[in-house]
Image (cartoon, rainbow, N blue to C red; front, top):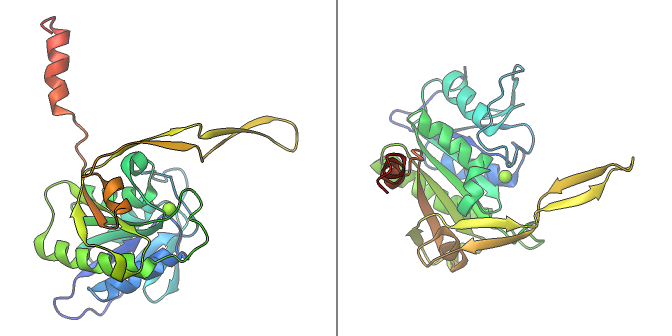
Length: 265
Ligand SMILES: [Mg+2]
């Protein structure tokens, strides 16, 4: 367990990500959270993007202390939250933040995202949790400047807001920030999740031994958008804040199913 000398009343914040402990987004988020409270980073030792909510069950996990308040784990973002919150920190954290991801997590991306899944794990543990992502050009992120400092600024504002107000039950915030200087961001908007389907995202390739292989990635995203969605909002220059609920139940579908099952519909 980490020995922390904490100032009276200071909030304890666990910082993690899925791009790995050495990524610039984690550094920016940690620096931002150090302004808000006592921040400790517990993050994967390498990139674990798109691992979703995977939990490592079949091998032991090792923790390495890299700096006074930075730890790496040879596991997934979910492993980091579980070990960080329950074993490394001196007490349950007041807040869990994940990111700042290199690239947006919009629409159905949230189901693949390790960044968002870390916040899901925190929410399951009953801890207020937020996921932060920086909108970059699809798919590689392009070669221009990456404004992690802008996302860090809004991460600080939203973390303070959540520490003061809490969050609705079983709900995390999925935050996507435009890749712009702070002066160009128009503000914060609360949004709904859009829908994205990738077309042609499985490429065929050959191994050096002549085997046909498949490489998942790329493709053309097809969007179901709308002015109140995460996608349109961040494309319009605003910070998109989507409240994500962990109860996946489609309540209206229960009646739909019952009616048809019972022959009434
Ligand atoms: Mg990532």
